[in-house]
Length: 316
Ligand code: SF4
Image 1 (cartoon, rainbow, N blue to C red):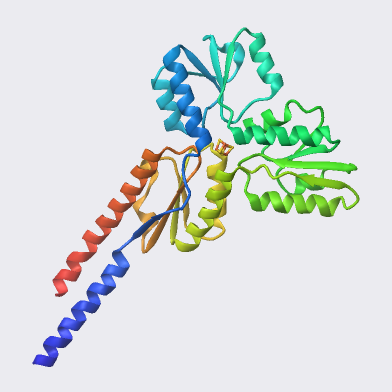
Image 2 (cartoon, rainbow, N blue to C red):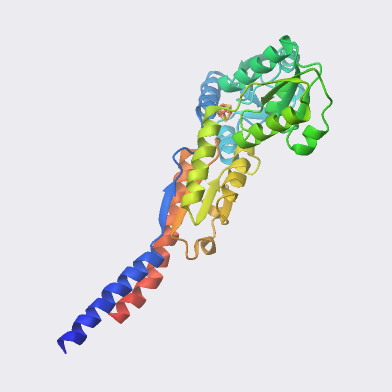
């Protein structure tokens, strides 16, 4: 009788341990995630300038719908063509712009406020130095990205490459100078630089690393996160290049990666049987959206625990 009571108690302990392990869902954040200082400073500057008078931002200040909506709600206009601007003051985004584009805008009689990130300026200076030293400039990045437009528009000749096929299409030159869009993954940049060197062994290939530190930190932290997680949630705007790069990096180490813009995109079935859920976010994702997504995931975990624990109780 005593032995059967002890066995029943042991069974109950084992069952509780089992359910705690299977329903308990750990939610962890990447060591580096979310909005970078360049985007924070640009938003702060936009808000400051808008208080001083009507302001139009040229293009998307950040690739995040919630942030843009918030700016619009403060009366800040957005225009993609300087000719359509109706305010006296316009702001260039953190992605920067070429000297030619700035001159065209000023020629319209507009006052230009530059929110260009200092690390984008580093990339501009790197390309200018390569050209000055006689190198043919090659930019690793997305041809149609606003930052790449800004980086290349002042150059008389240049190439933009994003993959192996682009590199294979390059012409041979005695001196090739390589820099990259600030948000490109370091692995891709290194492997394309190595490929350029292999393809043109006779050329003098000079590389200046212009991937920004916040991008590197977020990419490295995303690798650690994905390795430790059963499911990874990447938060960021649908058009955000660095968010998409985080999705692609995480997908190399975790098979269940989902990109969401807000908590409304989360689906409970993504978390089935997941013990560890990792969260990361692109450089234009505000803190409050990250908090809301994490809260919703924790609610799913609590709902799952509620559904499972009554069964545990009924056996005790
Ligand atoms: Fe600056 Fe990097 Fe942020 Fe772009 S991602 S705004 S370069 S810190």
